[in-house]
Amino acid sequence: GSVHGFLSTLGLVDDRCVVVPDAGDLTSPPKKFRDCFFKMCPMHRYAAQKQYKKASRSGTGDVYLVNKLQHAADMEKMQNREEFKKLMGSAIQYGSVVQLLHMKSNKFLTVNKRLPALLEKKAMRVSLDASGNEGSWFYVMPHYKLRSPGDNVVVGDRVVLTPVNAQQPLHASTCDLIDNPGCKEVNAVNGNTCWKISLFLEYSEDREDILKGGDVVRLYHAEQERFLTCDDYEKESVVFLRASGRSKPTDATSSKALWEVEVVQTDPCCSGGGRWTSLYRYKHLATGQYLGAQIDKDSRDDSNRSKLRGLAGGGPVLHLVSVKNGNDIASIFELDPTTVEGVDQYVPRNSYVRLRHLCTDTWVHSTSLAIDSKKEKPEKYKVGSAPLREDKEAFALVPVSPSEVRDLDFVNDASQVLKEMAERIEQKAISPNEKRTLIHLLTELIFFVAGVENTGQDPLDVYGNPDRDRQKLLREQYVLDNVFKLLEAPFSSKRGEPLMALEDLGEKKYFSIKLMCRLCYRVVKHSQVDYRKNQEMIAKKFRFMQRQIGYDILAEETITALLNNNRNLLEQHIKPAEIDAFINL
View 1 (tube, helix red, strand yellow):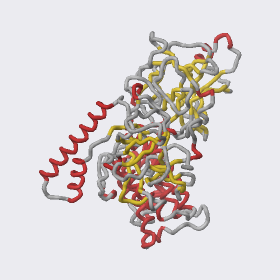
View 2 (cartoon, one colour; view 1 turned 180 degrees about the vertical axis):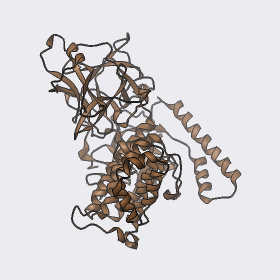
View 3 (cartoon, helix red, strand yellow; view 1 turned 30 degrees about the vertical axis):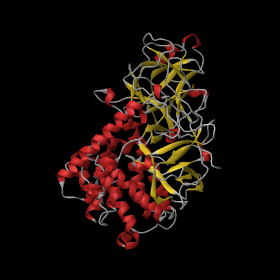
View 4 (tube, one colour; view 1 turned 90 degrees about the horizontal axis):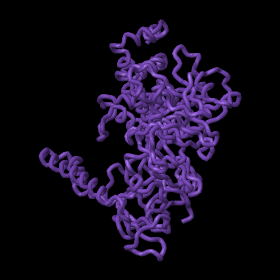
């Protein structure tokens, strides 16, 4: 076809599949390269799962039958997992059936032959599906005649992916998505689209016991008992070791301390298992920026820095920073083992390592220099890099579970969408389709933070035990900030006349805005349950929430939940002005 680019997605808040030609190519991969990773899996069976879903939806009163079908569905899933393990490492041949598992979302690429594509109505819809179905089966067929059915598929081959149940190949459309210009729709239709298979990671190196490209880790400084973190301070992105008041420092985990490991290769699209001789980059998962080092102009004295400068005591000093460009040589590091290891051995996943900055030939070390020195209790400490190596300046590579990474990805993507939607509402430019997308996203956030599976129930009636780590994510990744922006946007006069007045919420034409506000307050309510830090952050919005009491958008219910049996919060945040506001309601 005429469209060139990686098969990709729009993040974890959208199940559509796209090709973005301008995002990158085989010589310069896209910035969000993880959106393009798919694992080739053997064909899964779905007959029992299909029967169970059908019985569950029909609401049959035969509980015994439903339980029996559920057991069969669970057994089928287990057999699928066993079959996958058994076939791992076997060559894929032309004419065989595979499934494509999107690694970031853990969902299967799926064709729905009953629904038309959103843009090309003669084509079939393609999306990601959490469990997959028969529409997730694809024949791998050769594009050129030099290959034939039964031959092994070779990396770099051009292939045609044809759905088993639709018989219309996977196709990259020339049409741009209306809400995402530059993103080409992926659908299934008779056409000339072929796909080139580009290897990211060998199956033999996809091991749990070694460090490899794509792994997400925390870097824990063993001596200082602090995690290497990247966050904004005074409107600048800074890298630091984060101090914590916790009795067990390893519990002071933050979503801002997650780093994706990149193993530098000659092929920019390929990765592999990390060896002690390999070169590495560390990509900050929340911001997409890379760990780097540059000259530090801070003139303050630090005993550790002075000691490690060695004979070049009068030369410039370095500190760790975040750099935007992954191709910057300042972002490359080497790992040095703390035990005797073979030079070309793989790096064990739970290793203690010392970091050497390649282009300056310096070693990363801790300092006692506080970045936030104006605070009564500083918690951000500068990380330096010096010519001399100190044995104790070692970091533990702490693996992060895929589910935790997926949670961060979802919340990060959700935060960005909420921010954009708030701006669209302020500009009075939000479309009905965008409103539906926003309401769906807020609904998903409620189920997400409440730790309840979405089976179609009313999100306003959801009650669970909110997940503390997820509550923390909503605060750290600015979801709560953006939820309050959404609550303010329809009534804001920052850009001229507001979209509407609070008094108009009862009108039928503003039903979707009212529902949006109710869902926003429900997200806020779930995010503060038994979590002090979130409560204090939300309490700063008391005056704002008070102004929205009495309009049936759950503001009063949220305030009541926040203050109930919470005397410290009452004393700290309810001042005479707030009391007067309550009296005047």
